[in-house]
Length: 315
Image 1 (tube, rainbow, N blue to C red):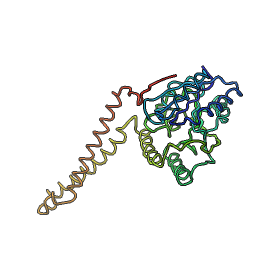
Image 2: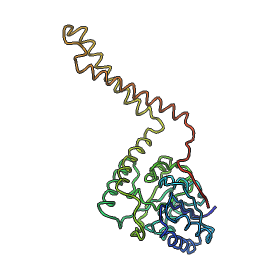
Image 3: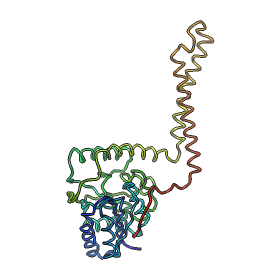
Image 4: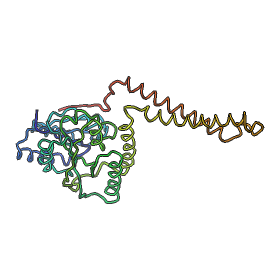
């Protein structure tokens, strides 16, 4: 087993790959690590894959995985995690904004200080203030509040993991932003943070726009719900359904008693607003309860999901 696996998802980063490889190689040789670098080409349309093939021919520590099309960063990380076999796994971006010189200290925090996961914190950023920095601060504050994981920068691509973490989490959809939360939900509680140097982008343009923050907040709601009720959906849907049904049944009981014994000559029940409140609450309550019941059945009978990506080539 190697000391380090460096997992690098990428999309159209042909200009930076040779420089990144040289930089990583220099750091690895300086520290005498046994290592592998796994490039995951997430459907690039430039010559990124040809560059990776060239690097692999010169350096046996290079591995490559090529997707048939662009499936997203989470799927790329999932493939990389499945393929890696280092004691410590490092993830980083391919755009030269993450500094490989940070790797030795991240490695020591995992191996010597016993962390399960260490996340980088880009305290000083070289991104646009309103387009990325401010939304990122709001996003991170919301993530801390809902998840209970006290990190300043959830979305930093530079992270270090004990190998057992990456083999026990399932990164799908757009959940790469919440890997620390996924790790916590699986029982890995020693999660740390390290201030890392953020480099200004040297080549190309960012692949992420403002929509990633909208998607990020929606994913945050999803992962909050899953972490609280994912294993027992009846605890949420059943509770809400029962409360709604009780409210509806209470209104229906009141209307029946009022019509039969108190105000027998009053308006028809169907002319009273309480009737429609009772009807809506009882119907919604029944639907929520059934949703929870069906969720429990699905959880008990679910089979392993198919992979959410297809690989065309492997080096």
